[in-house]
Length: 109
Image 1 (tube, rainbow, N blue to C red):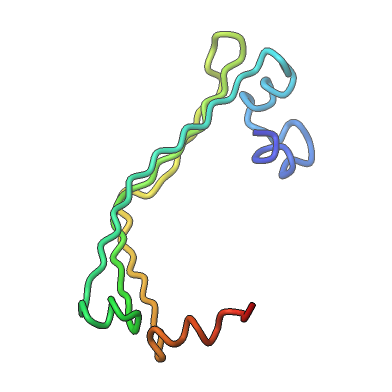
Image 2 (cartoon, rainbow, N blue to C red):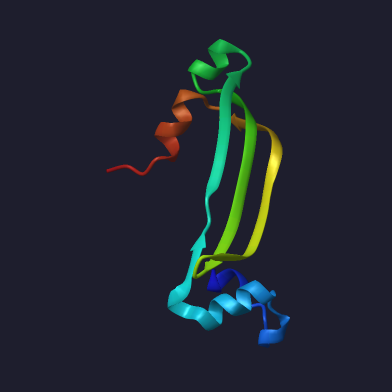
């Protein structure tokens, strides 16, 4: 937590009050930062070009959520969250030489 909040604050009064309280409490402060992610990767496109490694196209869909909960003694003093409700990406790998490209670009032993 210190890396996320404290380096950007030149002085303590610029910190969120809960973060400042946590830094003062030291050992009595507990920070939880769960991150949840669910993604699905589907390969689409021409089967033959994919299998011989000429052209691979993958569609990535899903969501991502992360939160920070700061607890001093038994009291929540700060909470924040962020995320992406709908991930929609396309990854495309092109290898003009197909299966030969891996042999040419890999170092010889």
